[in-house]
Amino acid sequence: MATGESARYWQFPGLPGVDLLSARYIRKTFARHTHETYVMAAISEGVEAFHHGGGVHFAGPGALALINPDTMHTGHAGAPGGWRYAVLYPDPRLVADIAAETTTIRGTPGFPLPVVHDPVSARYVHEVHRAVDQGNALAADSLMRIAVARLLRLHGGPLPERAIRTAGAGTALRARVLLEERMTDPPTLEQLASELGTGPFALLRAYREVFGMPPHAWLTDARVHRARSLLDAGVPPAEAATAVGFTDQPHLTRHFGRVIGVPPGAYQRGRARTYKTGSGTDS
Image (cartoon, rainbow, N blue to C red; front, top):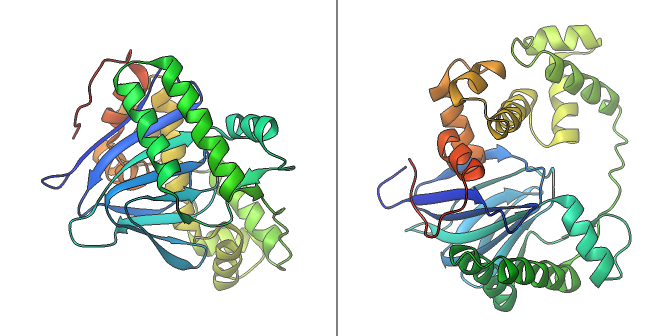
C-alpha cells in the first residue's frame, strides 16, 4: 500500500454474517467489481468517489456509500488526501431478516441511491466498529441491527426485478456459464463468440448490458470471488491463485486488492483468526 495508507478486513465472531473493513486510502483505486453482500460505507474523512449506475458519485464526511449486492462499481479518491471510512458488509439474508422485522419493505430490500448524507446512521456504523474493537459482542450486534434498520427505513425500498429484455441477454448468460466452467483456461473473445453463434462486438455489447462490464473484467472479478471462497476454506493464497486461473500469487494479490481492499494473505488472516483486541495494518 502507498505510504500513509492502511486497511484491515476481518470478521468478528460476535457479529456473524457481517464482514468489516476499516481503511485509510490515499491513492487506492478499486477496479470494476461486485460484492455478494451489501456495502454500507461510512466516510469519516476526505472524499470517496466511485462509478455506479452510469455516473460518478462522491461521499464525504457524514455520508454513506450504499451498494446493493451484485452491483458493479469502482472506487477512488474524490479529493486530494484520499478518504477514511468504516464499512459493514452484511449478508443479504441478514439484511432481509432485519427488513422483514423492522420495515414494510416487501421483496428484496435495497437502496435506490448510492450515496446518502446521514450523519446519524454513519455514526452508528462507526460505533459498530468501536464495539468490535472493544470485543463487545452485544453492543456490536445491537448497533449493527440499529444501523441497518435505520438505513432501510430512511433510504431503502424494494429492489426492482431485473428484467433483461435485450436481444443478446440469453447469449450473455450462456457466455457467463462458459467462462465459469473454463475459468482457468478461458477462450478468447472471438472463440467465445463463435461458440455462441454471434460476433465479438455483439457479445461485448450484450455482456456490458447484462453484467455492467465486459467479459474479461467480469472474469477477473469472478476469479477474485472464487479465490476468496478458497481462502475462506483455508487454501493458501498461492494455491488459490492457480486454482482460479491467475498465473501466480502476485497476480492474485494485485487483483484481489483492487476488489476486496486488502491483500489475500491479510484477508485470510483477518477472516480465520480468533478476534484480538486492537487493529493493525497488513501489507
